[in-house]
Image (cartoon, rainbow, N blue to C red; front, side, top):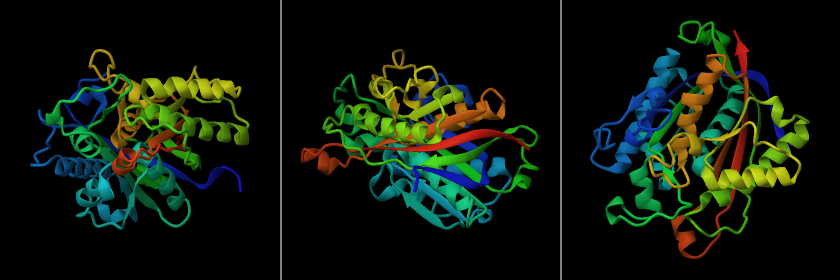
Length: 344
């Protein structure tokens, strides 16, 4: 069996929607997000964890609205987040009348959900939803210290994005007829490549980019070797979220193997914030980061005809707070989704 899985039946990204917090709204992509939280990013809830669940509910509801579909039109929701036992997804999506599959891929969860949803829609189902989220306050409380602690952040640390992205996938062209996307270029998932868990021996939880970059390099090298394609064949090779440190390492690792991706590479963690102006150190991270950047920036580019062929590589640091406290290293993962343009 090869590394690349071809999608036998076209699977379209029917719609997508984003929910973000105030820091994300103030970043370079702020005007493109669909829903922005209140001043304190609570989304009307009394705990940070409930706030994250509410973000997922809002994102999926808006994506369904854009798709002109109901939750009962979906055959599965695949969703995940950074909280223990995927609590953000479990509570946020509990009232949708749809079978649910909870996922954990750390910051690669959006790519994992899209990958698995596309395989389901190309074989046994017609429509699925892929959803992911992160909230800065809930993630800090779980993985580091509560915000009230006010601890210093290392220069290599990344800022967990407060955001949620939801995508509706369908194998039916006719689903576009009643949507605002009808007549425009639409994103179609062409093929996927499942990542391998790669442990480079990184133990610094404040340098997740270094932990994830080797996994991203492994996935990309396997993909290009098997596909016989070149980086120049793609408009964008988007990773999420290696940040400043990890992006440099990835480009160095691939270049050392004769694969120069620097001309077309971008990283969700680098473009969601003004890294210097907003004091985000190495950039953004979190399950919501790549999801909202993909939806608000990259898929918008496909629908407006600005780009037509992209590789989306979701990267994740498969860390656990207890394991880190015990001195364990941090394995990385990187799942690849090839998204191209189709004119209906």
